[in-house]
Structures are given as structure tokens and as C-alpha cells.
Amino acid sequence: MHVKFVNTGGMGTQGNLEQWDDFVGERYDPNRKTEDFRKFDESAPAGVREFYRENHARQTRQFVQEKRRQYAGRGKCEMGIWEACEYLNTLVDESDPDTSLSQIQHLMQTAEAIRRDGHPRWMVLTGFLHDLGKVLCLYGEPQWAVVGDTFPVGCAWSGKIVFPEFFEGNPDGQVAAYQTRLGVYGEGCGLSQVDLSWGHDEYLYHVVKDYLPLEGLYMIRYHSFYPWHQEGAYEYLMDEQDRAMLPWVRKFNPYDLYSKSAAPPDVAALKPYYEELIGEYFPAKIAW
Image (cartoon, rainbow, N blue to C red):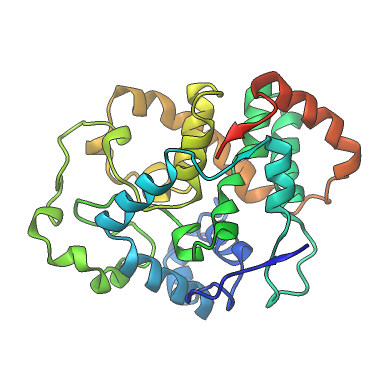
């Protein structure tokens, strides 16, 4: 049974989960000329611009903290990892009938690219898991609360966040305590103490935090935090652990962005390998 997107505005039914990924892939293309960089903000598809307009207006600190309370306790259900992959695979956007790549195929593409390059098994598994937090869409969450570049709330927004002009609609802009360089945080407090905009990264981190190495958890939790790992923003909030883990996040990100052009993987043929890999790190069922 296919589960349609809940029509909650923004890109819920007007766009699709892949559209913003494609935009990000173009925005951070390492082969693109420097002088062309900002043009992707201005020439982005209308649906992407509308998505970020809503995302930036609605991701307040209060909203983020409410969502963490709602989901970080992992009380939604119990599922195995492969079961969650199949559940995510029911995510279909009816406005995009030409999409042929399933969610599982994207996860496998990422993981297989990591495996081909000889990285550790935990990193292959991380590649396979990294987008499973998008099941939030199937819980009824709007896409602006599931995908998109993430950013800190509770302090001044960096000009390096995509479409920073859209923060004009965010009520936190009227809270003086949130509009300073540090806001509610301390110098070098560490990213684990910083509230990032809510989405699939943070949700999945809480689901898998007891099972993966720290490097893998950073890849999952911060792979959408482009202002930090690609643009160098918010370095003053980092602690020593963040500095040590940043190279791992940067190592992971190209596999997520640039593996999509490869031929679709044979899910049935690869399933036994991934079931074994999952079993090496996870019990049969975990709390979501």
C-alpha cells in the first residue's frame, strides 16, 4: 500500500523529497565555478524556494524543542531496520509520477558507493541508514519539518544558510536573546548542546544512538547541517569532539549527494548482505 504525502502546505504535495536533494547537490557541486555559486539561490525551482520560505519561517526554537520532546523518546513504534526501510519505501509523491528510484535504492546506492571505496562496515551501514528518519513524513509531519538544510535555532542565523532572507518571517527574529552571535549558547559549548532545526537527521540520531560508533552518529545527525560542514559557519559553537568528527561528516557527504547517478542497485540480490550487516549492529527490533 502506498502512503501519500499529507497535504500540510509547502512542498507536501507540490514537490518531492528528491527535489531539495537535487538542489543541494547542485549548490554544493565541487566542480561548479565559484562565481556561479550564489546563482543557485536565485534560479532555484519555485517549489524549492517555497519550501525554504516555509521552513525558515516555521522552524522556531519552541517548535524544535516540542518536536524533540515528541520524538526523541522513541515511543512511536517498534520496527526492525529492514522493516523501516520497507516502510519508508511506501513514501510516494503522486505529483511526481516519473520518479523511478525507490527510497531503498537511494539508501543502497549510497551504501554501495561507500562499500566500493573500502570503508569500514559501520560506515557502509551508516550510508544505508542515513535517510530512514524521513519516516517522519509517514507519521504526518510536513516536509519542511523533515528535510532541508539544517541550522541552529536560539542564536543569530548565519548568512551562509541557504535563502537567509526567508528568516524575515520567523518569530524568533523578534526575540532579542536569540539574535546575538551566541544567543542562548556558550562559546565552544559543543554542537550536542545546540538545538538545530528539526528534521530527519536529528530524529534518526535519537533512534540509532545506542548502536553505532560516534563517527557514524555524527554523519547521521549532521549530514544536512551544510552551513557548518560545507560553509564553515558556527565554528565558535564547536568543541574538541566536533572538530575531531567534522572530517568524518565531510567524508560521508559526497556519497549521499553524488551517488545518485549510478545504476539502480539490485535490491533483491543485495538484501542478504544488508540483512547480515544490520544484524551485526542492531537487534531484531528497535524503538522508533
